[in-house]
Length: 137
Image (cartoon, rainbow, N blue to C red):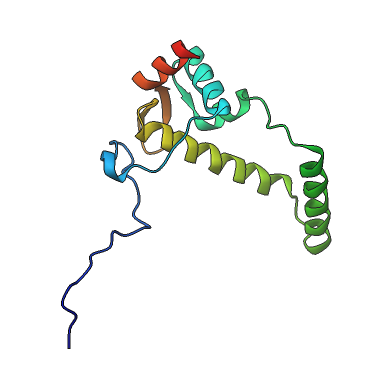
């Protein structure tokens, strides 16, 4: 016997649109951090910038002593298991996090996206909310 009511649950793994902003109710939760503000300053200075260049211009994330010790243990354990270089794994993770933060800033109006061709990376420019944030910061 079928149930009396059917609940249609939204798909939690639904992807956000790439080059048009998501509707307000579908946007992910987002809070602007100091590192995001620093990236907005870099985008403002360079007008158009790719995620790879932005990552190079931003200052590295400072770790606490406890985080540094945990990272050293993790690197030592991975080196014991695999002989491959670990720096490329960390660089890919950081790049992925940078793309994710830029995606959130795009959908919330802090940056603009432009892609010239399929072979070129996405370029980012300052959006209206990003300019307002820099004036307030």
